[in-house]
Image (tube, rainbow, N blue to C red; front, side, top):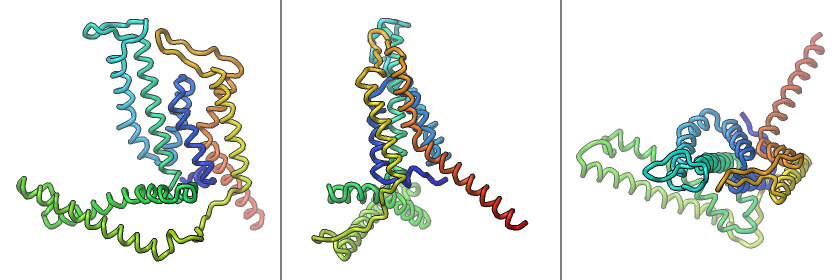
Length: 304
């Protein structure tokens, strides 16, 4: 399924992910964390489908459980002692703090996975190509090189395996020799690929003064509306943070700020931020379905 949010201007995508990642790092309020992890999980599944579900169940869920278990074993602060483990107190506050910390790590990883899918290398170069041209080019080339290196390594490994020269056959010394051989082939391929890239860049005039670059990104009215809405929501959430509407204290006792009308508004604003890509995609799907129905109706009327 196509992602509508990814078709917006790169500056909107970049500001959005910077916002949700930074807020996810510093806000430990349970309502904010639950909203963030549900929004990030939903968007990651929307982008990657079954692969995201598999990644979340195999990697993120055990990581959350591991952090939740490790924290109370080393952090013994808190007044509500549940039991003792090797003469060390296990407190309810440390367990709750460990659970929220695990959720926070999961939220950040999920948002970064969504960032890697939406913010492609060409978007990054578009945003920072004029500000830090060398660094942005190197960063985009590294991101592009890693998947190409993995694909080429798979091709070389399968080719060596067909002739019985992979690391899974032969004696220990032979497998070591085959592994070094595959590594040497990959190094040679990397050097040749870098030379070809350098020649291609030189032939296209990279680094020459006055050289222009083509871009397909234009900031239109649709981007203006979404950027205004996003900035207003960010201002509401940051105002709530400054007013202490999302404050929580874990030690020595768990204590959160009181729920007020302002805090409810802040929670709604954060909810809209976390679910903004999903909302935009749902709106796009609704518009497409409505246009399809109206088109079918027009065709039926015309046939009559």
